[in-house]
Length: 515
Image (cartoon, rainbow, N blue to C red; front, top):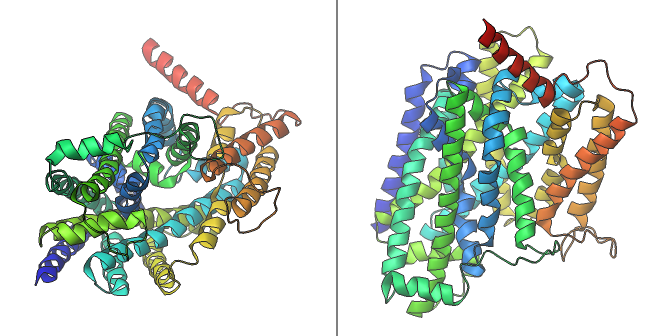
């Protein structure tokens, strides 16, 4: 009976999401509608969508698990997002809104030719596709462990609804489902923290005192040691991770294009970033409170709970009453669905704009829209297959899967900044950078850690895992820049760079002032 009530809440939530897709389906008459909503989304809704794009079911599990096992060090990279906001708002957003139609990778073609665009689009697609199957699997695994529901049934039920509202409702259905999920998530956070703070003896005071006494609020070690996850490593990781997400990731660039104006896009991005950090902090607090709860109550932890990531889901299943549990399950399900739906729509856009349009230049917009919808279905089905394979292999294929993804998707930020900042960079120098970065990434990913996929000791990668992306991007930029210095300057000069763009904007302003 209790699980039936929770199931009814989750089913109602899924039905509401499907209804959103039906509601917005009538407007999906062109690819501009389907992918960028005719640039008509309010900035506040765009901000909520940015939040949902950055928060998934992985956040529900990984952040509490990290703070339960260690401290708040996982939060440190998030602060770098706030540090990058001024550059993103003043330069990156208006640049993309002026320079591209729909795909960020149009810009890569303008600077370095068609092959660079194809490389960037493939790198983006592989990175996001690999993530999607894992998110769907982890969401279903967590829900199944909390409820006893069949994991494959959960995968199919969630995937069917998510693909349905994405394929018929386009980006508008995705954005407004993100808004709904944002409110559900905040409600879920409040409920979970309420139980965690007031159930233990001594209440919130005892919870915080126990955690503080054991150093659970620490942000990590300040040592400049790049072989373990210290604060400097977390800062380096955050700088390059969020740099890549906000300058070369199509899911973010798509959000920039949704807003009615540059100012609206800037407000939306700022709102999303300013919401992300508190959400991450609250999930860290949840993990800390779970640790304090079991320390203060002395409750025995079942032997089946082997990992820190399992503690928050276990607490929910053991201590939340029917109905409340259903709300948390809906929040967890929604977190996965909104991120997956966003990636589905964006992957469809990349495949249509960066590949299909080039292969079929004579195709009408109506034909491109049909292909876009078909691609949403195909990619959705492939992710179901991936998630089911992970169920059958009990996740044993994850390490190799992530290795392939990391190798294929590295360096996009370095390539963007090479194009954006260097007046001398050419197609040839860009590919020198790509090759150097790829060679490094293959070596680092395969030889990293205590149990490397390929052991080349003593020539294994010595740094912490979090440094690989940063070093790979730096290598691409530096190698490309060095190669460009060996070439003759191009006749195009600084066209396509930030310097040309800034000069053009200044000339427009001056012309307007003299008119």
